[in-house]
Image (cartoon, rainbow over all chains, first blue to last red; front, side):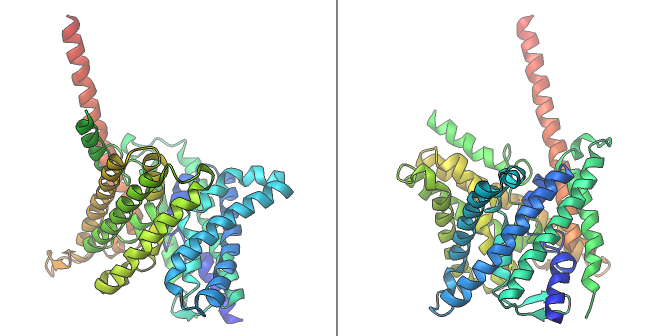
Amino acid sequence: MKEYFLIILGGLLINNFVLVKFYGICPFLGVSKKTDTALGMGMAVTFVMALASVFAYVIYEYLLVPFELTYLKTIAFILVIASLVQIVEMVIKRFSPTLYQALGVYLPLITTNCAVLGVAMLNTEAIKIGAAEVTVNLFGAFLNGAFSGLGFTLAIVLLAGVREKLARADVPKAFQGFPITLMAAAIMAMAFSAFSSLAF
Amino acid sequence: MQHKKLSQIAVNGLLNENPTFRLVLGMCPTLAVTTSLINGVGMGLATTFVLFCSNLLISLLKNIIPDKVRIPAFILVIATFVTIVEMVMNKYMEGLYQALGLYIPLIVVNCIIFARAESFASVNPVLPSMVDGLSMGLGFTAALAVLGSIRELLAYGKLGGIVLLGEWFPGIAMLGTAPGGFLTLGLCMALFNYVYGRVTEARAHKKQAKAKEENV
């Protein structure tokens, strides 16, 4: 039970995917101009990360490990993710057009989001959370995917909130656009680095 | 004509469309591995190799790959070269392999490689695609080297593992951590924008002055 709690806390705060681990920086900087689009992107990524974690774990444990093909994991996982994104897109389009309209544009982008491949790869080894180390099982992999995704959502929505205010600020010309956004992210990362001292 | 075009492509990746400072692509490795000069250059060269090979192969295969399945096909090509890099580094560069860790397999999802495959290699002949891959890769490597040097020097007083600043230098440890990555990249990007803006402005002025002279 304690392990699951650690995975949840690690995904959300201690090992925050964006601000501590640097996974998924491209959408973090690219799709964070408005809070509602940031939230849409965050939820889409969370959904795919949770699903991809489960599928990648099953393929790794029951296919690659028994046949000693673990060196193929990069290729296997990226194919799983690419086809998963495609299927998710088709399913959502068929059954929930409203959700499709909200997430539609972001879905294809998720294939090349390193947060998704990152979480699938992390699940194959012991995960360091603060001072503890956790090996995941299938449910742990699902939790790690889902809550790392929520950690991503938290970071991108927070940054979008800052950028909405920044849009009306008087920023020096050289700092306009990405540089000032990176400054804001730096300050957020400082705040998040404090979580690493949480110990159990 | 062909020659000039190739040189333009070569300069493009290093300056006008520098993947890090101008296109803002491939940010994850840029921030994560630039804690030292060697890590930055290692990552840059690994990416350059993958970019060069995937551009070459995709440009060769562009007429065979059906348009509908091009994205999975590109990903497969890129993932194959990344796996090669991973195996070679694991065998011959143990230290660098450990330091870069998960970011080596994550070269697969580096948006620079995919962006060049989609926007350049799949519509251009082989030779320009090779030059483009090399130039983009070296532009990326140069950016990582600059960031890595700044962070290593200011955080640990070293450069390439050699102590440059003596004991008197306390070291700004923060620059070696996550917030320092964002901060250094932000400041470098602002500086690049400032210089680039100044240069293009000066060029525009010169052109205007010249045009005026000709009119008179």
